[in-house]
Image (cartoon, rainbow, N blue to C red):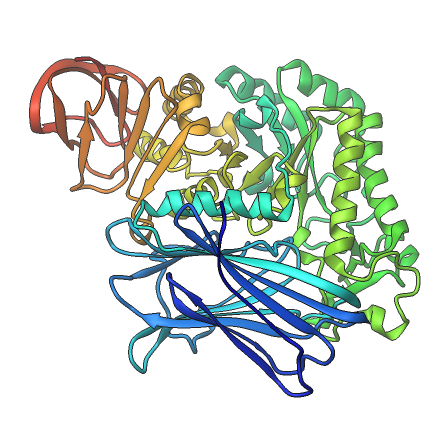
Amino acid sequence: MLLLLMLSAAVLPAGAFESRNATRAVGDVTLTCETPGNWTFRTAVTEQDGKEYLCVEMSAPEPALPPVFTLSFALPQLGTHHLWNINGTARFPLKPEWASAARFKSSLASGMPLYAFINDGDDNRLTLACDEVSRELISVMGVKEEGCLLVWKTTWFTVPEAPMTAYRTTLCLDARDVFWADAVREASLWMREAAGCVAGPVPEAAYEPLYSTWYQYHQEVYDHELEKECALAASLGIKTLIVDDGWQTDNNLRGYAFCGDWRLSSRRFPDMPAHVKRIQRTGLKYMMWYSVPFVGRHSDAYARFKDCILFTQKDFYDAPGDFYAVLDPRFPEVREYLTGLYVKAVREWGLDGFKLDFIDSFRFGKDGDPALRDGYAGRDVKTVPEGVSLLMTGIRDTLSRLNPDVLIEFRQKYVGPAITRFGNMFRVSDCPGDAQQNRIGICNLRVGAPGVAVHSDMIEWHPEETPGEVARNIQSALFGVVQYSMVLAQLPEEHLEVVRCWLDFSRRHRGALLKGWFRPHHPEAGYPYVEAGDGTETVKAVYQDGLVVPAAVSALPETVINASAEDGVTADFKARSSRVRIYDCRGRLLQSKTYRSGLRRVDIPSGGWMEIINR
């Protein structure tokens, strides 16, 4: 039962309003509104399962623009060393509160209002989450130099908003002494439930390894080359193809000036339906890339929708004649047009899915909301998040009727609870050649967006790389669905052996790697040790030399991957006797051996692994 701790109400005067709300986790949380007008605020703090919830309700006697308001607190920095967020990178630093890096934005299509203060011991110190997952929130979190305080401030309604008469939002405060990722995962699930965002179903195909054309081909894609590549990819165990940018244009300058009409390049794909069928006959599903909001200057769509745009590329810098504009999803004809593109591609070309890109570009330019200049004429909703939600709901529902298992990929930073309703594959943001950042992104998404199919960024390596380094690149992506972006036909045979080995490994251990419990350790160090399991086995990976890996912890089978740069892993065997098999990076059995309990140096080569097969 929820315990009511505090309830306050105030009829706002003409001046600023402020209220203080007592919590156990952070002391007083202050609500401040400088221009409340006729709005009335009510706040309540409740507690359940060791967490506190601060609810803010506001109302007005008649429709009015909601006022800007802020929640804030400050508390001593005691045993707190890092600040986690879902789009964070290496070290997850605590920044001074005045620094630009201490400022975070979240919205329907960018990030999520979920942050965790953690210590060097993988412990949660304070996790904060808000159920406002659609509107833009601006948060400032960092260290206040005077007194060495942790400060937090989140502000609502900083962008144009439609008139309303009531609004409600809730903040979750979790200061329990638990493993940091458990607190974050629970907070994410609470956000979904509180915001009414039910994640969509994930078809099994979303967990299959994937081949992407982007990093090696860029816009130079041709049907006959892809058909040869996919035959080889299928023989290795890859199950899905994404044809990225380039299929819709003969221009190869990497810009978006020719997006918007989404007509095939007849030079590259003279017979798309026949080509798609040939790929599918190899056993691969076929997906294609679209930059959803963009209409290029050279497209017919630009002329058609020139009065239905949010901004143009020229709003931010002096673009040449080859610029693009971003469509306004508040226009029903825009939503109908975009949805119709994907329906046509499924019906006429036989596609299995889509990579829907740049959802986070649905925003205002430097001149603000263009709808204010013409009184929202032609728009059936007044806020961009509402328009995006209607667009994506329509796309999801329409495509699902055509194919219940349609594949839809999004990528960081649009990965929050509101977006998980619309897609079933969520990929790490672009980090070509950066295995550590790929691993960081995967771990962030696995923890912050539980229950979805998390995909790695496309992995690549130089054809002259050693087999062990190729394996380590794959291993950094192994706790997500691995996307490959290499010209397979140009790889040496030893590289193909490594790829085949780890595709087979990921298939055999898919339940443990992708679908069960997940514990990534020490985000501040780039997640040097990760473990996962599904109740039938455990898979552990060490990415840094010098770590001690707990081994033979339970009676379940265990696998320990040496993804560090050094040969050998130090394992602390918990069982009295453990029989192991050791493999190299290509899956070749090197030795079988029995280890007694205690610390032991195990000769697992870099890029290889150890199986503990019995006790």
